[in-house]
Length: 513
Image (tube, rainbow, N blue to C red; front, top):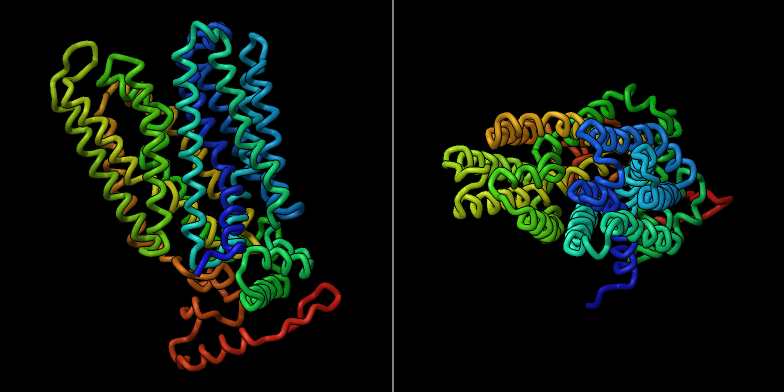
Protein backbone atom coordinates (compact mmCIF):
# COMPACT_ATOMS: atom_id res chain seq x y z
CA UNK A 1 0.00 0.00 0.00
CA UNK A 2 1.24 3.44 -0.88
CA UNK A 3 1.37 6.44 1.42
CA UNK A 4 -1.80 8.56 1.22
CA UNK A 5 -1.67 12.19 0.22
CA UNK A 6 -3.16 13.09 3.61
CA UNK A 7 -0.24 11.45 5.39
CA UNK A 8 2.26 13.25 3.17
CA UNK A 9 0.50 16.55 3.80
CA UNK A 10 0.50 15.91 7.57
CA UNK A 11 4.27 15.42 7.58
CA UNK A 12 4.80 18.45 5.34
CA UNK A 13 2.64 20.64 7.58
CA UNK A 14 4.46 19.43 10.68
CA UNK A 15 7.85 20.12 9.09
CA UNK A 16 6.82 23.68 8.23
CA UNK A 17 5.84 24.29 11.86
CA UNK A 18 8.97 22.51 13.13
CA UNK A 19 11.08 24.86 11.02
CA UNK A 20 10.35 27.51 13.67
CA UNK A 21 13.00 25.81 15.81
CA UNK A 22 15.49 26.63 13.06
CA UNK A 23 15.31 30.24 14.29
CA UNK A 24 16.60 29.22 17.71
CA UNK A 25 19.30 26.90 16.42
CA UNK A 26 20.61 29.35 13.83
CA UNK A 27 20.69 32.29 16.22
CA UNK A 28 22.61 30.33 18.87
CA UNK A 29 25.24 29.20 16.35
CA UNK A 30 25.48 32.54 14.54
CA UNK A 31 26.17 34.71 17.56
CA UNK A 32 28.59 32.13 18.95
CA UNK A 33 30.58 32.27 15.71
CA UNK A 34 30.08 36.02 15.22
CA UNK A 35 32.20 36.83 18.26
CA UNK A 36 35.19 35.35 16.44
CA UNK A 37 34.93 37.89 13.61
CA UNK A 38 37.56 40.62 13.88
CA UNK A 39 35.46 42.81 11.56
CA UNK A 40 32.42 42.50 13.82
CA UNK A 41 34.45 43.40 16.89
CA UNK A 42 36.02 46.36 15.10
CA UNK A 43 32.67 47.60 13.76
CA UNK A 44 31.27 47.81 17.28
CA UNK A 45 34.45 49.22 18.86
CA UNK A 46 35.63 45.97 20.46
CA UNK A 47 32.82 45.31 22.96
CA UNK A 48 34.02 43.96 26.31
CA UNK A 49 32.58 40.84 27.99
CA UNK A 50 30.00 42.93 29.86
CA UNK A 51 28.64 44.27 26.58
CA UNK A 52 28.62 40.78 25.06
CA UNK A 53 26.68 39.67 28.11
CA UNK A 54 24.21 42.51 27.52
CA UNK A 55 23.56 41.20 24.00
CA UNK A 56 22.67 37.76 25.37
CA UNK A 57 20.64 39.28 28.19
CA UNK A 58 18.62 41.45 25.77
CA UNK A 59 17.76 38.40 23.69
CA UNK A 60 16.76 36.37 26.74
CA UNK A 61 14.66 39.12 28.32
CA UNK A 62 12.81 39.69 25.03
CA UNK A 63 12.22 35.96 24.63
CA UNK A 64 11.01 35.39 28.20
CA UNK A 65 8.64 38.38 28.28
CA UNK A 66 7.00 37.60 24.93
CA UNK A 67 6.97 33.87 25.70
CA UNK A 68 5.27 34.33 29.06
CA UNK A 69 2.81 37.10 28.25
CA UNK A 70 2.38 37.54 24.47
CA UNK A 71 2.60 34.17 22.72
CA UNK A 72 -0.37 32.47 24.40
CA UNK A 73 -2.87 35.33 23.90
CA UNK A 74 -1.95 35.59 20.20
CA UNK A 75 -2.11 31.81 19.81
CA UNK A 76 -5.48 31.59 21.55
CA UNK A 77 -7.17 34.56 19.88
CA UNK A 78 -5.68 34.58 16.36
CA UNK A 79 -4.64 30.95 16.01
CA UNK A 80 -1.41 28.93 16.15
CA UNK A 81 -0.44 29.85 12.60
CA UNK A 82 -0.70 33.59 13.20
CA UNK A 83 1.49 33.35 16.29
CA UNK A 84 4.20 31.63 14.23
CA UNK A 85 3.84 34.12 11.37
CA UNK A 86 4.01 37.22 13.59
CA UNK A 87 7.09 35.92 15.41
CA UNK A 88 8.84 35.10 12.12
CA UNK A 89 8.13 38.56 10.71
CA UNK A 90 9.75 40.15 13.78
CA UNK A 91 12.84 37.95 13.32
CA UNK A 92 13.10 39.01 9.65
CA UNK A 93 12.97 42.70 10.61
CA UNK A 94 15.50 42.17 13.41
CA UNK A 95 17.93 40.42 11.04
CA UNK A 96 18.08 43.45 8.76
CA UNK A 97 18.45 45.81 11.73
CA UNK A 98 21.37 43.76 13.08
CA UNK A 99 23.09 43.48 9.69
CA UNK A 100 22.89 47.19 8.92
CA UNK A 101 23.20 48.58 12.43
CA UNK A 102 25.34 51.73 12.73
CA UNK A 103 28.58 51.54 14.69
CA UNK A 104 26.68 51.67 17.93
CA UNK A 105 26.28 48.41 19.79
CA UNK A 106 22.96 49.67 21.17
CA UNK A 107 21.28 49.10 17.81
CA UNK A 108 22.65 45.57 17.65
CA UNK A 109 21.45 44.88 21.20
CA UNK A 110 18.00 46.19 20.23
CA UNK A 111 17.98 43.86 17.21
CA UNK A 112 18.84 40.90 19.43
CA UNK A 113 16.03 41.85 21.81
CA UNK A 114 13.63 41.91 18.83
CA UNK A 115 14.88 38.48 17.76
CA UNK A 116 14.12 37.28 21.29
CA UNK A 117 10.61 38.75 21.17
CA UNK A 118 9.94 37.09 17.81
CA UNK A 119 11.22 33.72 18.94
CA UNK A 120 9.33 34.02 22.24
CA UNK A 121 6.09 34.35 20.27
CA UNK A 122 6.88 31.67 17.68
CA UNK A 123 8.52 28.86 19.65
CA UNK A 124 5.66 28.05 22.09
CA UNK A 125 3.09 28.09 19.27
CA UNK A 126 5.00 25.61 17.09
CA UNK A 127 4.95 22.53 19.36
CA UNK A 128 1.34 23.25 20.37
CA UNK A 129 0.34 23.28 16.70
CA UNK A 130 2.22 20.05 15.90
CA UNK A 131 0.83 18.19 18.92
CA UNK A 132 -2.72 19.27 18.00
CA UNK A 133 -2.59 18.07 14.39
CA UNK A 134 -0.65 14.82 14.86
CA UNK A 135 -2.43 11.50 15.62
CA UNK A 136 -1.50 10.05 19.02
CA UNK A 137 0.17 6.96 17.51
CA UNK A 138 2.81 8.99 15.67
CA UNK A 139 2.76 12.24 17.65
CA UNK A 140 6.20 11.62 19.13
CA UNK A 141 7.79 10.87 15.76
CA UNK A 142 6.22 13.95 14.17
CA UNK A 143 7.19 16.14 17.11
CA UNK A 144 10.80 14.92 16.92
CA UNK A 145 11.22 17.17 13.90
CA UNK A 146 11.06 20.11 16.30
CA UNK A 147 14.49 19.33 17.77
CA UNK A 148 15.73 18.18 14.36
CA UNK A 149 15.28 21.67 12.98
CA UNK A 150 17.20 23.14 15.92
CA UNK A 151 20.10 20.99 14.70
CA UNK A 152 19.47 22.12 11.13
CA UNK A 153 19.64 25.73 12.30
CA UNK A 154 22.90 25.00 14.14
CA UNK A 155 24.22 23.32 11.00
CA UNK A 156 23.40 26.33 8.83
CA UNK A 157 24.76 28.88 11.29
CA UNK A 158 28.10 27.18 11.92
CA UNK A 159 28.81 26.25 8.29
CA UNK A 160 27.84 29.71 6.94
CA UNK A 161 30.03 31.35 9.59
CA UNK A 162 32.87 28.92 8.81
CA UNK A 163 32.65 29.67 5.08
CA UNK A 164 32.64 33.43 5.72
CA UNK A 165 35.62 33.16 8.10
CA UNK A 166 37.61 31.53 5.30
CA UNK A 167 37.02 34.59 3.08
CA UNK A 168 37.38 37.38 5.61
CA UNK A 169 39.80 39.45 3.52
CA UNK A 170 37.52 39.44 0.47
CA UNK A 171 34.29 40.05 2.38
CA UNK A 172 35.37 42.62 4.95
CA UNK A 173 32.36 43.59 7.10
CA UNK A 174 30.20 41.33 4.97
CA UNK A 175 31.77 38.33 6.70
CA UNK A 176 29.41 38.91 9.63
CA UNK A 177 26.63 40.76 7.77
CA UNK A 178 26.05 37.69 5.58
CA UNK A 179 25.73 35.55 8.68
CA UNK A 180 23.07 37.89 10.07
CA UNK A 181 21.16 38.21 6.79
CA UNK A 182 21.03 34.45 6.28
CA UNK A 183 18.97 34.34 9.46
CA UNK A 184 15.95 35.31 7.32
CA UNK A 185 16.03 32.08 5.27
CA UNK A 186 13.98 30.00 7.73
CA UNK A 187 11.37 32.65 8.70
CA UNK A 188 10.76 33.57 5.05
CA UNK A 189 10.15 29.89 4.26
CA UNK A 190 7.82 29.50 7.26
CA UNK A 191 5.74 32.60 6.51
CA UNK A 192 5.36 31.71 2.83
CA UNK A 193 4.45 28.07 3.60
CA UNK A 194 2.08 28.42 6.55
CA UNK A 195 -0.65 29.92 4.37
CA UNK A 196 -1.06 26.51 2.73
CA UNK A 197 -1.25 24.67 6.07
CA UNK A 198 -4.52 24.07 7.94
CA UNK A 199 -5.14 25.75 11.27
CA UNK A 200 -5.34 23.57 14.36
CA UNK A 201 -8.73 21.79 14.37
CA UNK A 202 -8.76 22.04 18.16
CA UNK A 203 -8.47 25.81 17.91
CA UNK A 204 -11.37 25.86 15.43
CA UNK A 205 -13.53 23.84 17.84
CA UNK A 206 -12.68 26.24 20.67
CA UNK A 207 -13.89 29.07 18.44
CA UNK A 208 -17.12 27.17 17.61
CA UNK A 209 -16.09 26.80 13.95
CA UNK A 210 -16.87 23.12 13.51
CA UNK A 211 -17.14 23.00 9.72
CA UNK A 212 -13.65 24.51 9.39
CA UNK A 213 -12.32 22.03 11.95
CA UNK A 214 -13.73 19.14 9.91
CA UNK A 215 -12.25 20.58 6.72
CA UNK A 216 -8.84 21.00 8.38
CA UNK A 217 -8.81 17.42 9.67
CA UNK A 218 -9.93 16.05 6.30
CA UNK A 219 -6.67 17.37 4.84
CA UNK A 220 -4.48 15.40 7.27
CA UNK A 221 -6.51 12.25 8.14
CA UNK A 222 -7.02 9.20 5.95
CA UNK A 223 -10.77 8.69 6.42
CA UNK A 224 -13.94 10.52 7.37
CA UNK A 225 -14.41 7.96 10.15
CA UNK A 226 -11.15 9.11 11.80
CA UNK A 227 -12.23 12.72 11.44
CA UNK A 228 -15.65 12.10 13.00
CA UNK A 229 -14.23 10.28 16.01
CA UNK A 230 -11.60 12.96 16.62
CA UNK A 231 -14.06 15.83 16.24
CA UNK A 232 -16.38 14.17 18.74
CA UNK A 233 -13.57 13.73 21.25
CA UNK A 234 -12.37 17.32 20.89
CA UNK A 235 -15.93 18.63 21.30
CA UNK A 236 -16.41 16.62 24.47
CA UNK A 237 -13.21 18.10 25.89
CA UNK A 238 -14.20 21.66 24.97
CA UNK A 239 -17.71 21.18 26.36
CA UNK A 240 -16.29 19.83 29.61
CA UNK A 241 -13.95 22.81 29.98
CA UNK A 242 -16.70 25.33 29.22
CA UNK A 243 -19.18 23.61 31.54
CA UNK A 244 -16.68 23.64 34.40
CA UNK A 245 -15.53 27.19 33.57
CA UNK A 246 -11.88 26.22 33.14
CA UNK A 247 -11.28 27.50 29.62
CA UNK A 248 -8.83 30.27 28.77
CA UNK A 249 -6.74 32.57 31.00
CA UNK A 250 -3.86 31.62 33.32
CA UNK A 251 -6.03 30.86 36.35
CA UNK A 252 -6.44 27.08 35.79
CA UNK A 253 -2.65 26.71 35.73
CA UNK A 254 -2.60 27.33 39.48
CA UNK A 255 -6.16 26.54 40.62
CA UNK A 256 -6.39 22.99 39.22
CA UNK A 257 -4.10 20.68 41.28
CA UNK A 258 -3.60 18.30 38.34
CA UNK A 259 -2.61 21.10 35.97
CA UNK A 260 -0.44 22.75 38.61
CA UNK A 261 1.54 19.56 39.21
CA UNK A 262 2.01 19.09 35.47
CA UNK A 263 3.20 22.66 35.09
CA UNK A 264 5.77 22.19 37.86
CA UNK A 265 7.01 18.94 36.30
CA UNK A 266 7.21 20.55 32.86
CA UNK A 267 9.14 23.54 34.20
CA UNK A 268 11.56 21.21 36.02
CA UNK A 269 11.92 19.13 32.86
CA UNK A 270 12.79 22.21 30.77
CA UNK A 271 15.19 23.52 33.41
CA UNK A 272 16.69 20.04 33.41
CA UNK A 273 17.35 20.34 29.70
CA UNK A 274 19.80 23.14 30.46
CA UNK A 275 21.21 21.28 33.49
CA UNK A 276 22.45 18.57 31.12
CA UNK A 277 25.16 20.99 29.99
CA UNK A 278 24.05 21.18 26.37
CA UNK A 279 23.28 24.92 26.50
CA UNK A 280 26.67 25.73 27.99
CA UNK A 281 28.49 23.49 25.51
CA UNK A 282 26.54 24.89 22.56
CA UNK A 283 27.25 28.51 23.50
CA UNK A 284 30.84 28.10 24.71
CA UNK A 285 32.13 25.23 22.57
CA UNK A 286 34.92 27.42 21.24
CA UNK A 287 36.43 28.21 24.65
CA UNK A 288 35.84 24.61 25.77
CA UNK A 289 37.88 23.22 22.87
CA UNK A 290 40.53 25.88 23.44
CA UNK A 291 41.43 23.83 26.51
CA UNK A 292 42.75 21.06 24.24
CA UNK A 293 43.34 22.69 20.81
CA UNK A 294 45.44 25.69 19.76
CA UNK A 295 44.23 26.17 16.17
CA UNK A 296 41.01 28.21 15.83
CA UNK A 297 40.23 26.81 12.36
CA UNK A 298 40.29 23.31 13.84
CA UNK A 299 37.89 24.38 16.58
CA UNK A 300 35.43 25.97 14.13
CA UNK A 301 35.54 22.87 11.92
CA UNK A 302 34.77 20.68 14.96
CA UNK A 303 31.81 22.95 15.78
CA UNK A 304 30.48 22.60 12.23
CA UNK A 305 30.94 18.82 12.22
CA UNK A 306 29.22 18.57 15.60
CA UNK A 307 26.25 20.49 14.19
CA UNK A 308 26.14 18.14 11.20
CA UNK A 309 26.14 15.04 13.39
CA UNK A 310 23.46 16.66 15.55
CA UNK A 311 20.98 16.27 12.67
CA UNK A 312 21.70 12.55 12.40
CA UNK A 313 21.57 12.06 16.16
CA UNK A 314 18.18 13.78 16.42
CA UNK A 315 16.71 11.46 13.79
CA UNK A 316 17.09 8.65 16.33
CA UNK A 317 14.13 10.15 18.18
CA UNK A 318 11.91 9.80 15.09
CA UNK A 319 12.03 6.00 15.07
CA UNK A 320 12.41 5.38 18.82
CA UNK A 321 10.13 7.80 20.69
CA UNK A 322 6.82 6.14 19.71
CA UNK A 323 8.33 2.64 19.81
CA UNK A 324 10.11 2.68 23.18
CA UNK A 325 8.41 5.65 24.81
CA UNK A 326 9.40 9.00 26.31
CA UNK A 327 10.67 7.65 29.65
CA UNK A 328 13.03 5.20 27.96
CA UNK A 329 14.71 7.93 25.92
CA UNK A 330 14.93 10.34 28.86
CA UNK A 331 16.45 7.72 31.16
CA UNK A 332 18.96 6.36 28.63
CA UNK A 333 19.86 9.90 27.60
CA UNK A 334 20.50 11.10 31.16
CA UNK A 335 22.66 8.09 32.04
CA UNK A 336 24.56 8.30 28.74
CA UNK A 337 25.27 12.00 29.17
CA UNK A 338 26.40 11.45 32.76
CA UNK A 339 28.88 8.77 31.67
CA UNK A 340 30.15 10.98 28.81
CA UNK A 341 30.74 13.94 31.12
CA UNK A 342 32.48 11.78 33.72
CA UNK A 343 34.75 10.22 31.08
CA UNK A 344 35.74 13.53 29.44
CA UNK A 345 36.41 15.14 32.83
CA UNK A 346 38.72 12.28 33.84
CA UNK A 347 40.42 12.25 30.43
CA UNK A 348 41.30 15.95 30.39
CA UNK A 349 41.98 16.59 34.08
CA UNK A 350 44.12 13.50 34.62
CA UNK A 351 46.43 13.92 31.60
CA UNK A 352 49.39 16.33 31.33
CA UNK A 353 49.34 19.60 29.37
CA UNK A 354 51.74 20.22 26.50
CA UNK A 355 51.87 23.93 27.30
CA UNK A 356 49.70 26.75 26.06
CA UNK A 357 46.59 24.89 27.15
CA UNK A 358 46.79 22.10 24.56
CA UNK A 359 46.83 18.32 24.97
CA UNK A 360 48.40 15.41 23.14
CA UNK A 361 46.67 14.33 19.95
CA UNK A 362 45.14 11.14 21.44
CA UNK A 363 43.69 13.13 24.34
CA UNK A 364 42.33 15.79 21.95
CA UNK A 365 40.73 13.16 19.71
CA UNK A 366 39.28 11.38 22.75
CA UNK A 367 37.84 14.67 24.01
CA UNK A 368 36.12 15.38 20.69
CA UNK A 369 34.74 11.82 20.56
CA UNK A 370 33.28 12.07 24.07
CA UNK A 371 31.73 15.47 23.38
CA UNK A 372 30.17 14.04 20.21
CA UNK A 373 29.00 11.03 22.25
CA UNK A 374 27.35 13.45 24.67
CA UNK A 375 25.44 14.93 21.71
CA UNK A 376 24.48 11.43 20.56
CA UNK A 377 22.68 10.87 23.88
CA UNK A 378 21.32 14.41 24.26
CA UNK A 379 19.72 15.08 20.87
CA UNK A 380 17.00 12.39 20.78
CA UNK A 381 16.36 12.45 24.54
CA UNK A 382 16.63 15.69 26.49
CA UNK A 383 16.77 17.59 23.21
CA UNK A 384 13.75 16.24 21.32
CA UNK A 385 11.78 14.36 23.96
CA UNK A 386 11.53 17.26 26.44
CA UNK A 387 9.71 19.30 23.78
CA UNK A 388 7.50 16.32 22.87
CA UNK A 389 6.50 15.60 26.48
CA UNK A 390 5.93 19.27 27.33
CA UNK A 391 3.68 19.90 24.34
CA UNK A 392 1.41 16.89 24.89
CA UNK A 393 0.68 16.70 28.63
CA UNK A 394 -1.63 19.72 29.00
CA UNK A 395 -5.35 19.88 28.27
CA UNK A 396 -6.61 22.18 25.57
CA UNK A 397 -7.87 24.89 27.93
CA UNK A 398 -4.35 25.71 29.18
CA UNK A 399 -2.07 24.23 26.50
CA UNK A 400 -0.83 27.49 24.95
CA UNK A 401 -0.20 29.19 28.31
CA UNK A 402 1.42 26.15 29.94
CA UNK A 403 3.72 25.31 27.03
CA UNK A 404 4.81 28.95 26.77
CA UNK A 405 5.65 29.18 30.46
CA UNK A 406 7.33 25.77 30.62
CA UNK A 407 9.55 26.23 27.58
CA UNK A 408 10.62 29.72 28.63
CA UNK A 409 12.01 28.13 31.79
CA UNK A 410 14.78 26.94 29.46
CA UNK A 411 15.82 30.54 28.83
CA UNK A 412 15.68 31.45 32.50
CA UNK A 413 17.90 28.49 33.39
CA UNK A 414 20.14 29.19 30.42
CA UNK A 415 20.84 32.72 31.66
CA UNK A 416 22.12 31.30 34.94
CA UNK A 417 24.37 28.74 33.28
CA UNK A 418 25.63 31.19 30.65
CA UNK A 419 26.76 33.52 33.43
CA UNK A 420 28.28 30.89 35.73
CA UNK A 421 29.78 28.32 33.38
CA UNK A 422 32.48 30.56 31.77
CA UNK A 423 33.72 31.53 35.26
CA UNK A 424 33.69 27.91 36.40
CA UNK A 425 35.49 26.79 33.23
CA UNK A 426 38.11 29.55 33.53
CA UNK A 427 38.84 28.75 37.18
CA UNK A 428 38.44 24.98 37.25
CA UNK A 429 38.90 23.88 33.63
CA UNK A 430 37.37 20.51 32.76
CA UNK A 431 36.58 19.88 36.42
CA UNK A 432 33.38 21.74 35.47
CA UNK A 433 32.27 18.58 33.65
CA UNK A 434 32.02 16.73 36.97
CA UNK A 435 29.17 19.10 37.80
CA UNK A 436 27.28 18.05 34.67
CA UNK A 437 27.95 14.39 35.49
CA UNK A 438 26.19 14.85 38.84
CA UNK A 439 23.32 16.86 37.34
CA UNK A 440 22.63 14.30 34.60
CA UNK A 441 22.65 11.49 37.12
CA UNK A 442 20.11 13.44 39.20
CA UNK A 443 17.92 13.88 36.11
CA UNK A 444 17.80 10.11 35.63
CA UNK A 445 16.36 9.70 39.15
CA UNK A 446 13.93 12.59 38.51
CA UNK A 447 12.52 10.85 35.43
CA UNK A 448 12.41 7.41 37.02
CA UNK A 449 10.39 8.51 40.05
CA UNK A 450 8.29 11.43 38.78
CA UNK A 451 7.72 11.35 35.02
CA UNK A 452 4.89 9.12 33.67
CA UNK A 453 4.84 7.60 30.18
CA UNK A 454 2.66 9.47 27.64
CA UNK A 455 3.27 7.30 24.56
CA UNK A 456 0.08 6.61 22.60
CA UNK A 457 -2.22 8.67 24.84
CA UNK A 458 -4.62 11.06 23.14
CA UNK A 459 -4.39 14.74 24.10
CA UNK A 460 -8.00 14.87 25.28
CA UNK A 461 -7.52 12.14 27.92
CA UNK A 462 -4.05 13.17 29.12
CA UNK A 463 -5.62 14.67 32.26
CA UNK A 464 -6.52 11.23 33.61
CA UNK A 465 -2.88 10.15 33.48
CA UNK A 466 -2.03 12.93 35.94
CA UNK A 467 -4.96 12.36 38.29
CA UNK A 468 -7.30 14.96 36.81
CA UNK A 469 -10.83 14.70 35.43
CA UNK A 470 -11.40 13.10 32.04
CA UNK A 471 -12.15 15.99 29.66
CA UNK A 472 -13.27 13.55 26.96
CA UNK A 473 -15.99 11.41 28.48
CA UNK A 474 -15.89 8.61 25.93
CA UNK A 475 -12.56 6.74 25.80
CA UNK A 476 -10.81 5.61 22.64
CA UNK A 477 -9.01 2.36 21.94
CA UNK A 478 -5.69 4.09 22.60
CA UNK A 479 -6.73 5.23 26.06
CA UNK A 480 -7.71 2.11 27.98
CA UNK A 481 -6.31 3.64 31.16
CA UNK A 482 -9.36 5.90 31.48
CA UNK A 483 -11.56 2.88 32.20
CA UNK A 484 -12.11 1.85 35.78
CA UNK A 485 -10.50 -1.44 36.87
CA UNK A 486 -13.95 -3.06 37.03
CA UNK A 487 -14.88 -2.15 33.46
CA UNK A 488 -15.12 -5.30 31.28
CA UNK A 489 -13.08 -5.34 28.09
CA UNK A 490 -16.17 -5.86 25.91
CA UNK A 491 -17.64 -2.60 27.24
CA UNK A 492 -14.65 -0.68 25.89
CA UNK A 493 -14.99 -2.38 22.52
CA UNK A 494 -18.69 -1.57 22.37
CA UNK A 495 -17.95 2.05 23.27
CA UNK A 496 -15.38 2.34 20.53
CA UNK A 497 -17.70 0.66 18.06
CA UNK A 498 -20.52 3.03 18.90
CA UNK A 499 -18.17 5.98 18.66
CA UNK A 500 -16.96 4.95 15.20
CA UNK A 501 -20.47 4.40 13.94
CA UNK A 502 -21.79 7.68 15.30
CA UNK A 503 -23.33 10.04 12.79
CA UNK A 504 -22.27 13.65 13.10
CA UNK A 505 -24.75 16.29 12.08
CA UNK A 506 -23.65 19.88 11.63
CA UNK A 507 -26.30 22.34 12.64
CA UNK A 508 -25.68 26.06 13.12
CA UNK A 509 -21.93 25.45 13.07
CA UNK A 510 -22.17 23.00 16.03
CA UNK A 511 -21.71 19.23 15.79
CA UNK A 512 -24.32 17.11 17.58
CA UNK A 513 -23.76 13.39 18.14
